[in-house]
Length: 301
Image 1 (cartoon, one colour):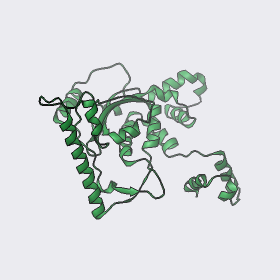
Image 2 (cartoon, one colour):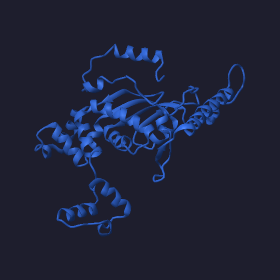
Image 3 (cartoon, rainbow, N blue to C red):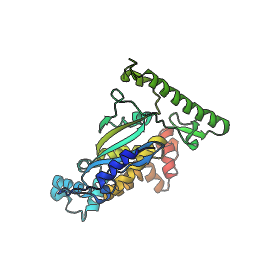
Image 4 (spheres, rainbow, N blue to C red):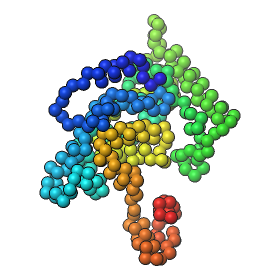
């Protein structure tokens, strides 16, 4: 269970005592504050605090560019202009702080996004709970034969059952030994900072993660993509739903230009121009590598 009854009661108490404020608020984000959005079998994402909204992006841009943006007729048009031309600083005026509960192996992938502030639950001071990520059968897949960092066909039958049993039994055995090594009930035992090294990568950890909207969009562009690993993608999807309610104009521009758009190289643009002119162009005539050509044809045929 992602949240204990005590945690749920604490969230309900906080949401039941709102305070007036003079700062700008996003009604969409207010609806998400403190609530836990469940992810995987024991994980969650919840908003602890935020700053700014769509208006904050526009305000910052107009201070920066002044009369240079007066040709933009409305806030949505200005935000789309900023996104289209890769202006980043106006989006940095918005920030969000999330409380995330996630498997350790997902956290190690997530932490590669270094443009954030992170404070993680410390197993040096506290004892981790007996909670492990165990994939649903549909996520038990073999290694891809064409992608070294991807999945292939889903395991079935006896092989799926064998792998699932190994995951469960190994996790449980490691935690049993972890508990046995800890100092407790008058025994000297092993220090927590050492005992934790025996725990598996699928045990759950928690952290507070704070970032600005520009870097959040970069995170979502990579991790909410269909090619991202499933276990981090579901967290990104949950955060994306929150961001859509928080800054709807900015998120719509992000979906259009980043998630739904494509960046073309000079060689790709040249090929498109030649094709539009009626010329038949193949990979050998394009100046592109085989990998570049494959990606190009996936988009343009």
